[in-house]
Image 1: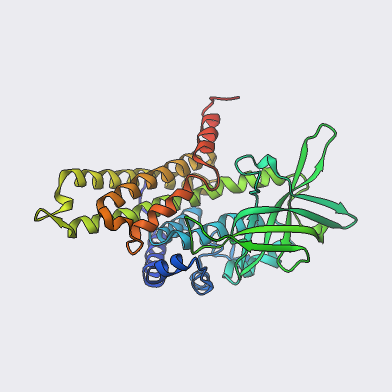
Image 2: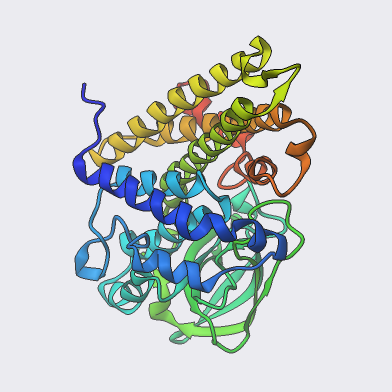
Length: 384
């Protein structure tokens, strides 16, 4: 067993870390306070090659393995969850379905601009009444001659309505059988199409500097060629996309936990009470020891899941485990980090407050912790 990263992966980690610390960290608190999405930083992340990391160079991507992508997300999340979310959602949910399921025409039309960071793409799955139950989708697409007519709406769509967003992949009900069984297909809808509008969602607890949007479709007409993959394959396509997406959420958990732990360790070395650095009090030292141990364990689980994916082997169970555990590890780490900071941990000027807030999304987005446990229990044979 070889636990060493390649020289290319180590270089990628250093490069992304330097970028995150030099370009994102100085503006993270301000952008979060203003709930402002930064086109400037997003384009800079594109220039760095952080979009289309696993996409072939034929379509403008970097052609790297999945572990390299996860390392990049981890390093961004170590500094700021919002910008890590922009990269994670774009690679896994925006670019991923187009790359793996798109026609040659669709790939060449969209991927070059998305991989370069010139534009973003949304992944329209969640609806007001369809979250964990994706089968509750009500958005419809009716075939009328050679046009799809889309009606309905989506919510909580990352990168769905930013100034850089070019469009979205939208799961729709495209037919209902006599037995009431729904057929799901994915339709590509570009921004600017008549009847397609978006609204940026404000007042978020988490990821305040990322774009989260509602999407609305009112008799939106697109070509029948805008279907992604085969008709009726939408549900399968979405589930496969989420399997890989869970790895990027896990990377956000590992990276965010690492950032909170480092902030807590630094503070514990400097802050003195009773004439002694608080990190030397056993109660606090044990907290930090537990934090370091849990991060190391879950990082190894995540990297194993990525290795399995890169080897073309089944990884769904490990992805669900990594997503579940990294989310909950970050929960515990950020809780302890705030506790170590005392009253200062409750102030937004300290990064641990932002880490504490941002963590909460990880136990909900791309499958709640409850859903992950259901997936895992099925895969280990608890259910038929």
